[in-house]
Structure formats: C-alpha cells, structure tokens
Image 1 (cartoon, rainbow, N blue to C red):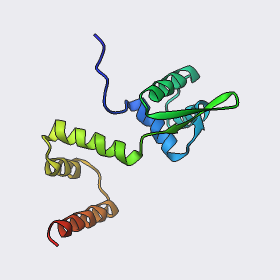
Image 2 (image 1 turned 135 degrees about the horizontal axis):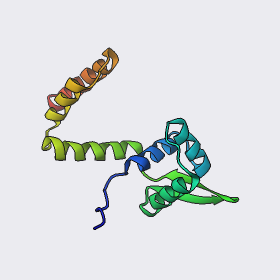
Image 3 (image 1 turned 30 degrees about the horizontal axis):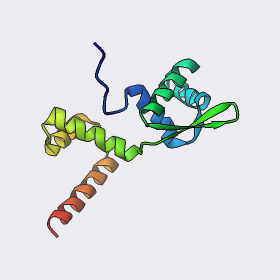
Length: 131
C-alpha cells in the first residue's frame, strides 16, 4: 500500500525549496551543487526527478532556458513554515501554542538575542490583545 501524500514538503523537497528561496530561478545543476555544499550528495537524475515531482505538486515552476530548465519556488517560505508549525502544534501539542512554546524554550538553545526577540513579540501580542 502506498504511503498517503503529505500536505507538506518532504525533507528533501524542503531542502530544495530552501536553496531556491535564497536564489531563484536556478537550474538543477545549481540546486544540486548547493545541496552538496549543505552535505547532501545526490545524483543529477535524483535531483531532477524530485524537482519534477515538485512541479507536479505545484511547489515549483519550471521554465525552459536554452538546453536547461530553470526552477522557481511557487510556495513562500513563511507560508510553508506557518503551515508546518500549525500542523506540529495540532498533532503533537493538541493545538496548544503555550505547550509548544514551553517545550521549545525548555529544549532549545536560546541565546540572549533570540530571547529578547521572543520577549518583544510577546509584549507586542499582549498589547494587541489588551490595547
């Protein structure tokens, strides 16, 4: 029995999207080079296969440029992050943002700059709720 399709990008698809979110459009060879720099050595055929699947899933747009194709992401980074985080919060933390944040702060290595940014966001959200 085939695994059901995910509503989110797979790990490899997300790695490809991250490359393209930095610089797009890019060819398969450029994406493959960027993945290799990040520690993912893949064959050209593996990368083109995944990227063509991503085109069918409407994660990427493909345009012919000379003998090669250039790929551009159709998904926005913020939108993917929000969707995946919402899914995690719903499935793991029963929809509780508080539980998710507490777990994140307890288990993550948060430096003083990140903690200051979190405090700033909490203060802004508190003001929005209680003007």
